[in-house]
Amino acid sequence: MTPQTAEDYKDRFLKHLSQTVPGRKEMVITRASGCRLFTPDREYLDMISGIAVANIGHSHPEVIEAVERQIREYSHVNVYGRFVLAPQVEIAERLTRVAPGDLDVAFLTSTGTEANEGALKLARKYTGRPGYVAFEGSFHGRTYGSLSVSWRDRYRDGFQPLLEQVTFVPFDDLDAAAQAIGPETAGVIVEPIQGEAGVRIPADDFLPGLRELCSDHGALLIADEIQGAMGRAGHWYSCQEWEVTPDIITVAKAVGGGLPLGAFISTREIFSTFLDPPLSHVTTFGGNPVSCAAAIAAFDVVERERLAERAVEMGENMRKGFDVMMEKHDALETVRGLGLWWAFDVSPTENAMAVVAAMERRGVIVGSMLNADGTIRIAPPLTVTTAELDEMFNALDNALTELAGS
Ligand SMILES: Cc1ncc(COP(=O)(O)O)c(C=O)c1O
Image 1 (cartoon, helix red, strand yellow):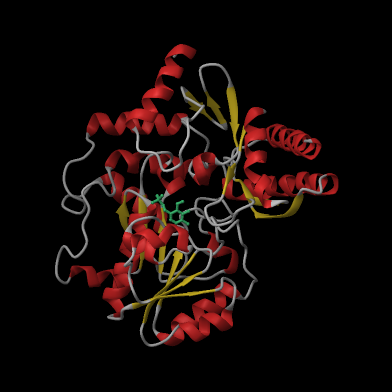
Image 2 (cartoon, protein in one colour; image 1 turned 180 degrees about the vertical axis):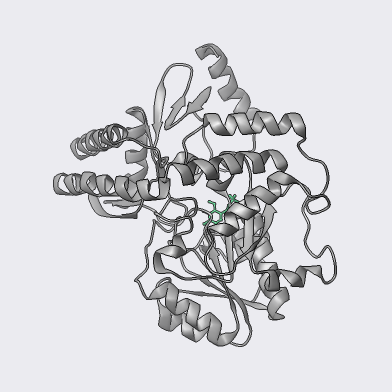
């Protein structure tokens, strides 16, 4: 693509694509590979993995090969569940093999919000109860059920009425959760580490405490692992950091290896509720065989290359790099992370977007958070090298120096 063609695409984008963030976009992507994104005239280091998707890097050769092979055999053939399709069996077997406890069954979807919709329905149908408990700071998706359990009035107000019986309690506050969970609670939905709230890591007793509360009250614990799965936080599922077995786990994003695939994973017993009446929950494209083939390849790369362990090792380099930055820059307020899932807070808050822009000018892509103004995310592919981390810290260092001087 020539730079002139790229300019033309920018104008046509504004004409024909629905925008949820106003303004002209400056990057026309022509190619992505590993940790790199390419435009017609330069390359960028992607330090957010397409928001926690490219855990094995962009356009991994094994994913490409698997997709090519599968699409030659078949792609979509019928609505999910009608036929036995080997790619669906293979990925469900893998996702459940590494899941804690007896979470042996997966319902495959296309996206994260769909996985959460399914989980919310499953909890209601299984328990026969109407209510949900969710957490301040949470993000679970933008369709109606997911939005109903997602925090932040600015994203909810224009879409009311949402599901009514949802109680929000402060994250990492077991006393508040204990007050909210009761005989009407079908499910408690929680991101074990809150992503869009700014990579909030709870105290060690929080998730085990929630597990106990749910068990005591007969409510289902739903762990939204849509950002946290596939090695991001050093485990297949981030709840494994606290050795907790939820009743339902939801996944998407990195699971598909770059193609759309999600799942909600639970026990055979809980899922049996979807048999009565038959077809209680269906989807046309959920578990698309081509997406499943990509997912199998991605899963096998994470497993073979021990990328979860690698995330922990590289996370140590990240911590060291941030220690240096914290010493040097007053604008860096706080930093936190686990594995290769990090965030830092910029002071003053209004400067965060300027930091994102200054790093982009230096060829490094970082991003803001939906539910944490002033916070910047760093979640590179788990294949990131120390040289690439150095490159990112260099850009951050320069960006913060530039802002301090302006
Ligand atoms: C924790 C969490 N849950 C759910 C979702 C929604 O996933 P999707 O955008 O695939 O619908 C996201 C997306 O960012 C997420 O981060």
